[in-house]
Amino acid sequence: MPRLAVLLVLALLTGCGAAPDSPLADQCDTVPPGAERVVLTAASGVRLGAAVVGPPDAAVGMAVAHGASHTLCDWLPEMSALAERLEVRVIVPDRRGVGSSEGDGEIGELAPDLHRALTWLHDQGATKLAVLGSSFGGPIAVLAAQRATTLPMCVAIAVSPLTGIEGGVAPLSENKPVASLWAVAETAFGANATALFEQVPQVKTGQLKILPVGDHSLGLLRGHPEAMTFVDDALRTC
Image 1 (spheres, rainbow, N blue to C red):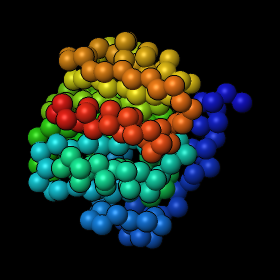
Image 2: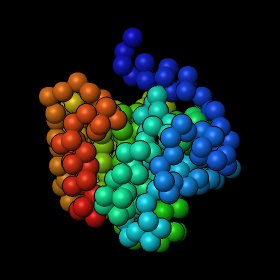
Image 3: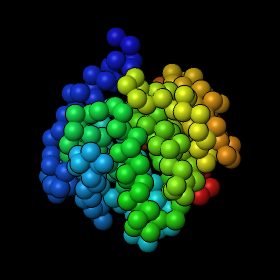
């Protein structure tokens, strides 16, 4: 079975397991200190469960698009540590139809949903905004950054990304620039990261890093410090 098909099957199996406004402790086995539940309302009225970490007065805010088999719970530990390390505010929404978010996983609404998370950060006081997308979330994050023309975007970060998702996520066809693009991937996803980096227009050229390893997505960040340092360095450009 092709890798993309596997990811889509995993996305469907993940399912919606908690209400958008349920306590984080009811959804996640481990909740980092200071993590707070946030409920975002998409333009269609769908409620998206999210979690936010980091100082409320942080100048830099980042929204995360997780991978196909993940929920926000998987990303909270790493993002909490990052938020503390760099003094940024990070919001991690569950993708619609997954975890604590309502909806049926409509592909065409995924980038607008992430844009809603960016708008929430801006409304809360962040003056510079970033996105991070991993695996299935990679093209969602890049597309959201391309379309966020009224927000103070500073960088889009793609980790082990796909180049697009059939049904409405096609950053390579958008022909709109991102402020800057930093892409890091393992060998198997190196061609995808390279395609995004070379074909998506950038106002300020970021960086591309391909690691000769097999770990993917969160595994890449957890198992290889140079990958997480790459993400930190990208955010430090904001």
